[in-house]
Every structure is written in structure tokens, then in C-alpha cells.
Length: 187
Image (cartoon, rainbow, N blue to C red):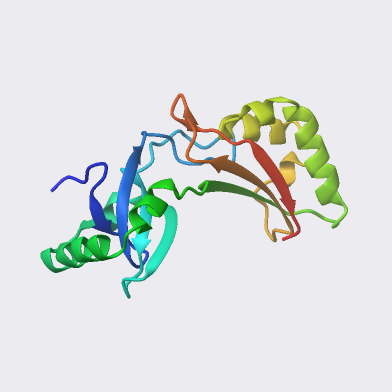
């Protein structure tokens, strides 16, 4: 049975989830300009949890690969119908519950000094400029990193610093995940 929008399902995280949408096809995250484009081995679904395994309200949202999503069995379907009929208000709360999903791209560096992390962040931020707030793809990030004085330290071990790029709600342009935020992490 194919999973459809609004289906009630079990996912890899505990509880009963509702399928909100399918993430459009997109390329895997890439951390260097040399990596080839490969489509994500999907489909990937955005799901929202109504209850946990103890049938208690437990709203949450996540993305889940189709391989981990299973339709509810008959017993769970009956329990769900009973839960919804006996809990006025919860279906409305559930309908309005939203939380932004974050898809993280971490790019590690073998920095020689802790103080280099701020310099790396500043160089990448200067190269990306205003484009980061407008949204950039992994190839644009890799190109920006390759133009810095830290390019040779990208993906080197031991890793001592990380640039973390954040995609919100699986925003995709031309099959590329789009990142709008950058953090510098000291590990």
C-alpha cells in the first residue's frame, strides 16, 4: 500500500503519526565541490505525531524515510478512532501544532588553532554575503569554502571545528536543499 498525505502511520519514532507531505526529490548533501550529484534515496515524508505508544498526547514533527513508515494495523486504527472521539479539543490542537524542521549540513575542518574557527566563519560569511539569508545550496557553500584560506583543511582529520548550515522545512530549489543559517561549532 502506497503512503498518502493524511494517512495515519507508525514511523521509526514511537507513536502514531499523520503524513503531512512528501518531500520533493532532491540531491544528497555534499560537502565538497568534487562530490557528484546523487538523488536522495527517498521517498521522504514529513510526519506529525498525535500520540506516543502509551496513547498520550505527544505532538511532534519529523521527516521519515518511507522504509520506516508503516500503515496502522486494524487494532491501532480502532484505538485511534476511540482516542479522537474521547478527546475533544485535541484534534484541533493537533491541526494547529507546527514546529519548523531543520535539516543540518555539518562540514568539518581540521583547524590548527581554536581561534581559527571564528576566522573560518568570517571568511565563509564574507564570501556568501547576503546570499545566505536568501538561501544557498550545498554546491554554493562548497564553492565559498574552497575560496577561503581554510579550504585545504575541509573534511580533514582530526576534526576540530565545524561549520553547520541549516535548512528549514526541506526548502528545495532545483533539487538542491537550501540553507539559510550558519553556525560555527568548536568540535
